[in-house]
Image (cartoon, rainbow, N blue to C red; front, top):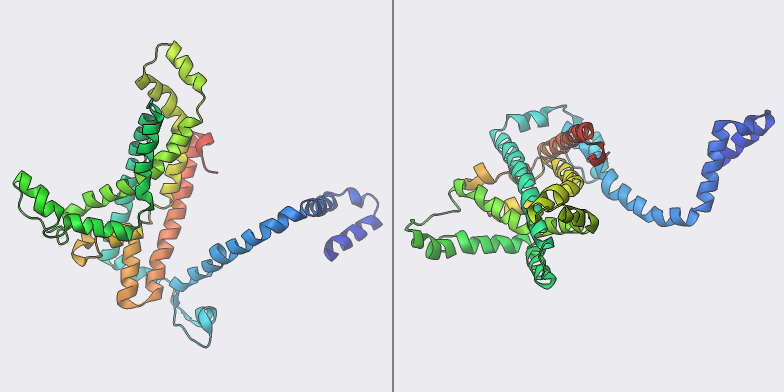
Length: 335
């Protein structure tokens, strides 16, 4: 590096300059690069992919502040930088729309429910599975619960339709047993919070349970042996040994989930209710709202404003949540 060589040469002219902190730091950096050159070369493809895939698209954060008009001759970036600045107009549209408010409330409420259930249900099942004496049977149950995670939401949407459409399984077989009249689920939004929450749990419980089972497997057996010697029952061992040991994992997963509290599972909320407009009061979330707006009004600026709103608020919520966790339990904080 010519700059470094010049700095070192300049430093050599003045007595004692070689011992200055800047020269020492640069010399240490050059030695480090030479010593681990092979590792840095292996790191390079990943860094390039990260920049192209994660950082280059961040230029798009300018779109909500522009009257974006795509010009074929200028290309995407040329069109972006030559478009007229319109300030916060796209955000004004977002905050004045009642549909956006409904989508925001739905997104936050669903995510709060999901965060609570994604802790309670998988932790309970993980503790039960880890206490099973027959490991072959436990492994079979874990596989059966993990399997739905690999099923596409498209396939799930048709399963849901087979159950809940007119003359479907529920309509033809279950409701008559209780003397309930036929229900048209795809026109009545009040039924869909329960249906959405059920399919979310069915899809993700096995995946989350595996994480907690792995955490339980890492707890030393000496804790349980000491508890058993003190006369602790299985319930007391779970309460005073297992649950405290799972606290850090649970807090980290919750913080990660909090970061996406303004993002929803697009595939779940779009495919399973079949994007039926009558169901929007309980099935519309910010992600489906953005997609539907883009399809209906073809204004990329307004849709980008909603995405920017999601990202900024989600980032702020993560920092605040992490700050709160760090105040209470520094070991469980993300950073």
